[in-house]
Image (tube, rainbow, N blue to C red; front, side, top):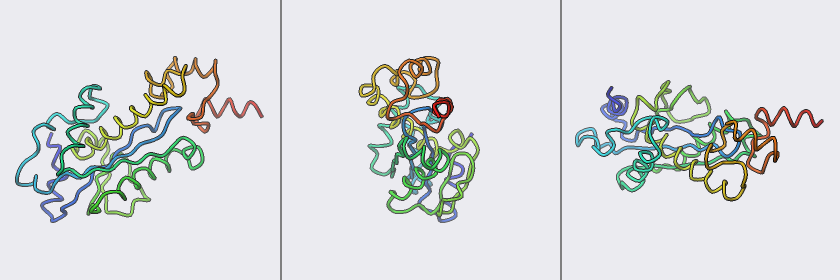
Length: 212
């Protein structure tokens, strides 16, 4: 599979700044949703792709070590432009996870300078995105730009959850990163929710409803 196909097509049409955008953390019961946007240099159209990123893929298909290695390459290469945005659990509860995810994506894109001429988005279309864009189902496995964004978002969120694990002990955030594992559900049953739990998510929402 040519994972630079979409970028090259846009570059060849004169779009110099093509961004890939993706998120991490839509499904967990706790913690923020994080989005990242990545722009590879237009010069790669002729100079060729950075070989160190050849095995870059959907972050879920990579090991922790691979994600960390790619994160380091992406964030230290001065020719690669990137931005990361975070929306916390309180905001997720207030505006819902879909809107929070779209806000994080738009915030990440807004922090890119210069602004991209076109955006490749993982998944379904984002109606609130003002920039020209193309939605790609399973885009993190089809586009290097989106895969890069997925890695930056995933590593950033995982690091945040490790910090939360030290702040909110007993929930196992370091292990499950906030997802609804049996370990996490058992901790919730014993301790109740903490400040970073999403109260609008089941089973937390169901428990809250029973109280009233």
